[in-house]
Length: 139
Ligand SMILES: [Zn+2]
Ligand SMILES: [Zn+2]
Image 1 (cartoon, helix red, strand yellow):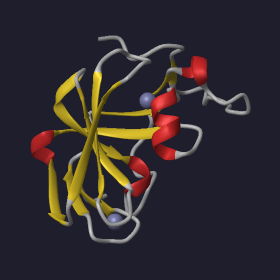
Image 2: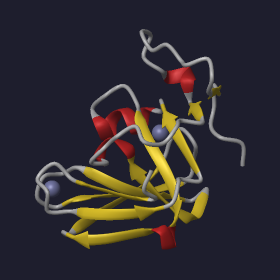
Image 3: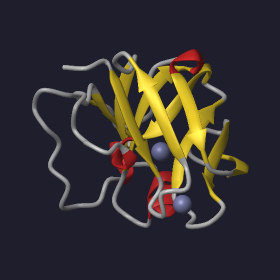
Image 4: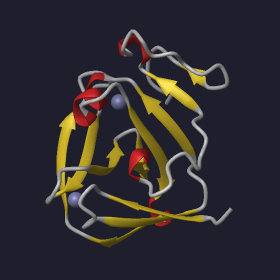
């Protein structure tokens, strides 16, 4: 398997490339991820910043303090189509998350943990081989 993976936003203007495996991939069931995605959860693949390269497109930043974790989150999304492609967290300042649904070939990396499951939608079934946490990742 190649250790370079690419992806981008819905309209195709934002494109990125990552190298190597993510340090960790997390499914997050918090309210902020539910709002950001308009769906049941977000999937973040976390890479050291140096392993993420943006190839094209313009990102706009929306920074807010999460009411779940009480820490800042910086979401970055395509100015054309609004897809949130990446974000950074106060908790992981040296990492950059890639919204894992934006990979050209999603699912190439495994999901290590599910967090904030206390606010998971009631129909969600958590996989038995992942770490499942009612609250956030331990700091
Ligand atoms: Zn776009
Ligand atoms: Zn979240």
